[in-house]
Image 1 (spheres, rainbow, N blue to C red):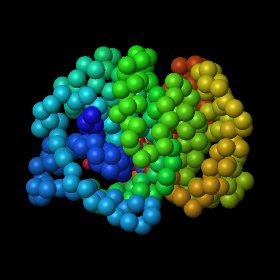
Image 2: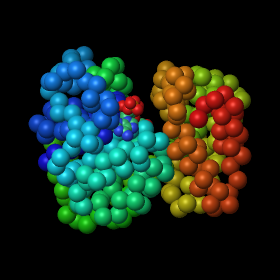
Image 3: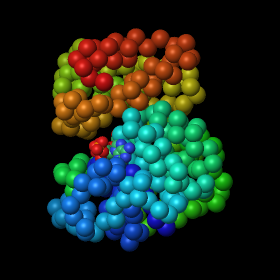
Image 4: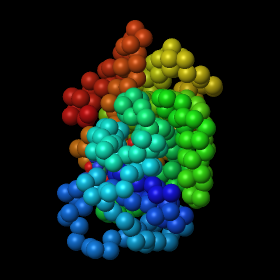
Length: 305
Ligand SMILES: NC(=O)c1ccc[n+]([C@@H]2O[C@H](COP(=O)([O-])OP(=O)(O)OC[C@H]3O[C@@H](n4cnc5c(N)ncnc54)[C@H](OP(=O)(O)O)[C@@H]3O)[C@@H](O)[C@H]2O)c1
């Protein structure tokens, strides 16, 4: 029941720690160069828990080059823009019945991977667990949440569902399985489309997006466009999305979105898989999304991509 996890960042280390707690002997995959540069022969993974304790676990590390056994379960924990390359880097080691579980935010990368890996079962996750990486192989669990998992692309057979559920059931996480994962991904996309790029543009905390009339109007206009596109795609909307967006701004008032943090640190953001994905979908459907276009243009002018 070995899971291989690719991407040793916040999510990768958080999930690896859960497999370790469940005695499941995960293998954390690094890039070959990173693996070679390690000095320790006995690496360990540290996790700062929500109750203030820190735990250390011996960890098995490998790279796509050093993995010998066929991989039956792969958890992909890179950012959206790195996911396809990461899975391709290990492609020749995946068994034909491999379960590929994708943890990426936004949309587009999951569909591209599902399209390519047709003999394997591809699953997408949407999670509200929160974590940040303190140091290499040292993660801080920042907030408990829930995780929804469901198939993306080809519908897996009953045995694949059973195997996946069985391989995750001992994790100390709140995990739900759904055959409506696209709905979950679209729900998160709607909130992220409105909040993330705008917070990066104004370089502000989420709560500060409600601070002026101009910002609120922009939030509302972005949300209207998402509502329009998701309806045309056939995604159900229950309740008022703009109310939800404002509620998220209030609930996470003191937080900086991941996009805002990436922009501050001059890192590539996931916006191409958030607003970029929305714009692409809208274009295919012949729907205008001027607010999203304008936001992406303003961000690009600031060098935020
Ligand atoms: N952190 C959270 O609280 C949270 C919550 C919900 C959802 N998410 C989503 O989860 C995903 C992962 O986020 P994260 O916060 O864990 O990102 P992260 O901390 O940046 O970690 C991503 C890791 O993937 C590694 N990576 C990239 N390409 C790779 C490759 N080809 N081979 C091996 N490793 C590779 C990166 O290494 P390098 O740095 O060396 O490139 C980095 O260590 C994102 O889509 C994010 O939006 C995160």
